[in-house]
Length: 307
Length: 250
Image 1 (cartoon, each protein chain N blue to C red):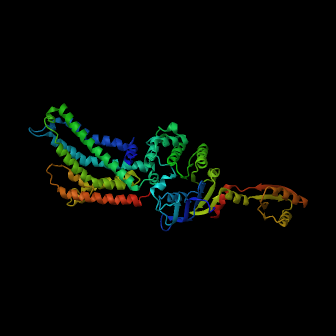
Image 2 (image 1 turned 180 degrees about the vertical axis):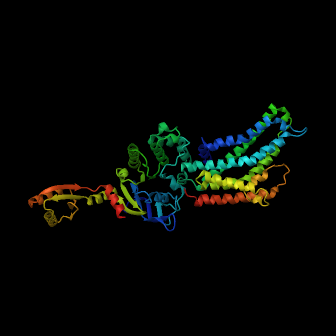
Image 3 (image 1 turned 180 degrees about the horizontal axis):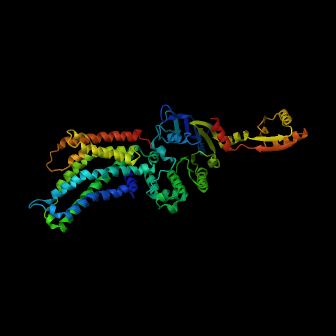
């Protein structure tokens, strides 16, 4: 992470455990710059929700410090929370009330005008269902209402814990569009957690990978993409694999003998034609040559498996 | 918007609200039907105001039946937050936890006061109606002894304040309505079983039962009773407030 960026969320050596014997989070150093859409990624039970609860002062850390929007969370004034919108796991909704009532309750506590309530209903496309009881809402509608609650205060920072949980593909796309709009047009910094990279890779600018309470990777999405590219190989099968390996090694390529094929570390797309040229010139018959790209998902999994 | 108005919105369409009305109607309706169908049993001797006997039954019913309703009303009001999983949402809003505590306990006291108000409105209305339907019962000849009612209401309310605060504490701590209700009912049961114990006045769930067969010139050592209950109320308010604001996490 670049140091010259203004950090909206910063944690320093953050540790937490529900009991003395079991530490859930180990020395987490989150750095989320202004305007970022930060994908907080990790399998179930990795500690994402616990981290989010710590950021929102719902839990107290055992060690370390948390700074949100320039204020230490431990000694934060209530005003800090007027600048944060949060959706933690399932949205907190009063199901016996209408969608409008739910928004009015939060608006009342936050001292927000009714016009903003109508505005957020429009943003999450629930205006037509505002007077329906929430118990009759679909899962996607409840999730959107939860998001509307988080958006009410026009926050500078939006913290969303698995906001697409249980949504169908259309619902996921809708939420993604909405978050992109908030980020691009209103400059909202967003922290969004998920256990599926595929759900958020089209959305985020930054990624943090958490597993078993440890932050394994943190940085720009393009850095993760670069790591992913580094893990890609060109698979080659010839009539004389040993000779082919010698030739390629002689040309300073990184080559391994795989289970079935030769594996050449992928550098760029021009490499394939160069390899074919070298081997053909040496009289080696090529049966197969294929670029095997490592997906972001595989890279993500490789981080977790290594841990 | 005031936090209390917000609490009122939350009560819309809830069982707690219905229970406040239905629970308040329950015993007056029971008394009404008993007096109506067994009128001969209740015809007073000459020069005797029937309201005293009628109100004593109303008070005793209040001591026995209303407590269960009150426990349930408190549990249901807190259950609105537990069911919506909304503590975490409330605690991430720009409002001090102390204000949330105060708003919630205020709405609980308000609902309970409405419950008792309705209870006595229904009871008096039922007595007046009985006077019209069954004149020999004598309800029309005599005035309602409002002093007697207010005195009982005051003493009874003082007797239940510590119990309400403890039950509020249990109910925000216990997510499960059955558990909090069970604990409250256990307290009431103990209060009833130990009713004649010398130091029963020190058991908060038992004090309402000391109001049974309430007489205007009761032997109850009022001064002492007020002090004990005021002390308990203050103690439980302070402890539950500290627990809510410092330790209670969503």
